[in-house]
Image 1 (spheres, rainbow, N blue to C red):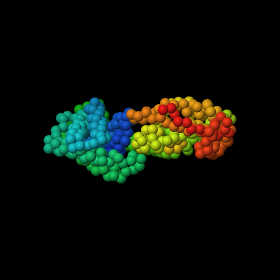
Image 2 (spheres, rainbow, N blue to C red):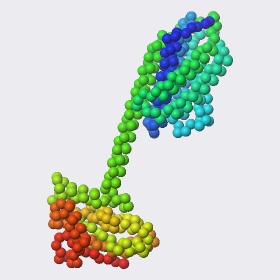
Image 3 (cartoon, one colour):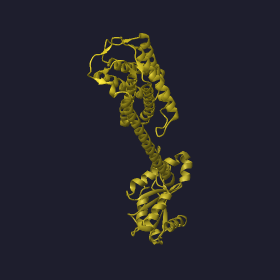
Image 4 (tube, rainbow, N blue to C red):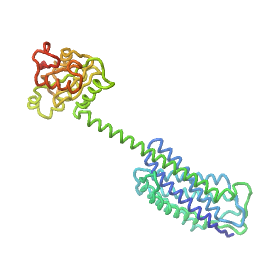
Length: 427
């Protein structure tokens, strides 16, 4: 018994195959770009969508083949052929989304995919409830299997190489690749169909089961909606991923700019720029406070002589050790900053009397510092200015500190506001 083909359904089956191929190429990139549970969600959903597309192409192609008798399809075998298509799709997407794609992976993946495609096709053919059963031309069956394996290998390579393309917009390389892959898919299908031989006395064995009325154009239309919907979801997910990446990049850039602007690279402490901004917030505008606070500068005296004795390479360890010691001693709300190369600033809202603050800070250096395998005794000079006694603006407070740095008063207790003293720490 000879059959004929409905040219319209043949063309539709190719279009479904090409659309399924384009969706597969898009999903390979989406899975590769995702991670964790999101990646597995795309793998599962994409496998169902892609598998449905491949299976729909197969059944649309079968509907295109017209026999002079009515044909029904076994529901169980039809469902099994659909599951085989989903399994093949999952394997293809999983392999194409790997970090590397070696020759062994391609060969093994293509072989398994080819077996799966043949399983889908010939299970679908077996679902045709006819008697006597279908005879097959062995040569054409082997040819269809060879096409399935070869097409699978090419599909894996193409999907792997094109997966980095953005899913946000239409991709011409993906379209061209999908059109080529569509040719391979329908080539395998119609070669397998050509292998089927129906006896002249063939009849439909039962009227129960799936009839041809549900296949063809209705099936192709539903499948197209599923595949287009999958592509839209992929595009939306890709756009969301880009927005999230851009947001992370902006946050990282902001943090990097903040560190460059406000953080000392050696100690990780805030620098003078942050101190000035903090002083501005405390003394001006709505954030201005009504209570007093003190600003102190700790200078390390004789540092150059120490470095000349112990080596310039000890400069950063020395500064870091001093910063850690001061920070451990200060109340949590006080602000410690890197004031200069060998100087630190302290903004205190707890001890606002200059003498008390100076004594507290000086006590920090009563014991030597451990720098490497050496104990180093430090000589320090500590200067203070107080808000609002010494000024009402950051500029005036800092200017007063600079003044007393260069013109220290020998007797702090009798000095006017804004003074300093120097005293070597205990050896």
